Image 1 (spheres, rainbow, N blue to C red):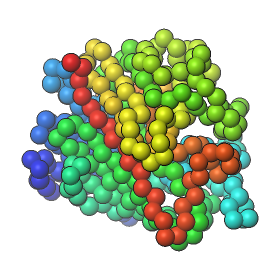
Image 2: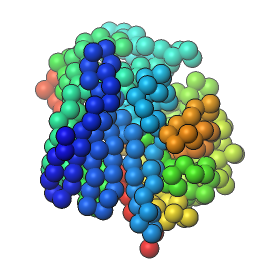
Image 3: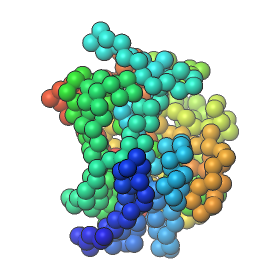
Image 4: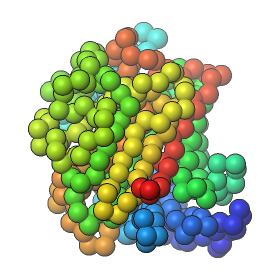
Length: 351
């Protein structure tokens, strides 16, 4: 099935079934031939074909070329993450004097909401707005899912416009006090994963970060980045410092230099050979930069063997483990309120 609008096209194809529910793969193409493929399994961006300085298209995100590989478990390639992005210490929190125990990993922490949103089959419909054309996904996370309180009604809208920008909106409401913190977990490699990301250059508009302990959850302190190997406040070639950082590379949450809720440029990624650049804008207060340090023994699209530092994740979200640190901005969502956050992945080329 094909839809058209704003000189763009959207195609929809059957990709398989999961627990009796149909999995669909949508392809959104803009007037510049940039193409985003996204599925209602986890609202996963499976492919993103972006022009280089000569107009040649390459797929700049990691992932798989078939549904079966996504179903076998993966490190959140391209997925929408929720209810809570990043880690929660001891997989628990206290809210309104009640203790909530969450789905824990082998190390005892909770990460990415137990992959609930990644593994869910979302409802989907095509949508057109001033921000582009694409898909609005909907999912109802039931009370108690992975330990979280409240029925959480969630929308994730992914749009592509003719300026080669992917506009993402996360929205949620609840019938009970709960915590919400959503992100997109795409792994970017602007040279089409033909090489590791060492020649990519990255800047993040942040002067502080959340320090973490051995379990990679925040200690509660927010030190300055100055003189740290993972300081990205100026444009930095990733390969120059990545081997000097604990945990085999960038794995930090950067607190952005911005006002609460302000839409502002958070990061810029450049790949000089292809001439591609990616600017990330967001309303969210921070961004996790993850250099795919633990990626190994995975064969992805085009039969490429994914290795550590094959890509970089730029995950905009609220502070990790905020519910256990009163000095972090609150992530509580109450009945009658609306959670709403935006991230824009704006692609271009070097002049």
